[in-house]
Length: 175
Image (cartoon, rainbow, N blue to C red; front, side, top):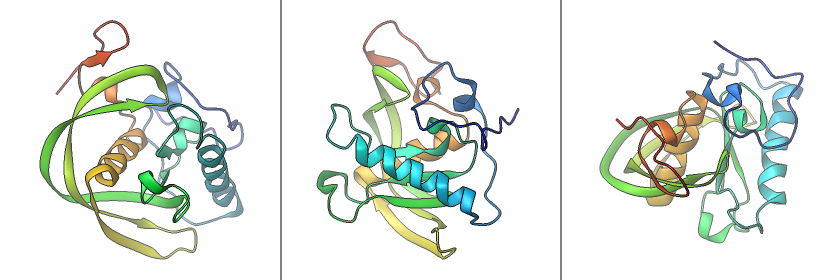
C-alpha cells in the first residue's frame, strides 16, 4: 500500500505507528517545485533540530509524512556546520561490505536504541536537486546513515531489523 501524503504532509516528525513510516515510497520522476518544497522541509527540520538532544544526522521524506524517495543527511555528522545538509533523490546503495553490529536510534521511534547489522562501506548514488547524478563512497557513520534512511524509503524501520537494546520491552522481528 502506498500512502501519498504529498498534499497533506506536515512538517512535524511522524512517529510509530504512523502508517506512512511502513509504506514503500514512490520514485521521484522529476524535480518539480513540490519536490523542492519537500527537500526544503527536510533541510529545515534537520537544521532546526541540530542542537537538540538526539538531533538527527539523517532524515527520510516519510518521517515528515511524504511518501517519496528522498533523504537528507549531514555528509560529515561530526562537523554539521561544514557542508550543510545534503539531499539525495531516489538514493541507491551498492557494493556494501565489512558488516558490523552497531547501536542505532531513530527519531521516529523515540527513546529506543537498537543493535543493527550494517555495512561499514558502500557506494551511495542518487540525484541532486539540480538533477545531477551523484555517486560516492560512504564509510563508517555515513554508510550507517545511508542504510538507515534508505530503509525508511522501503518502509523498514530498525525495530524490524533487530532486538531493542535500551528503552523498554523487547520489540522487533530481527533478521
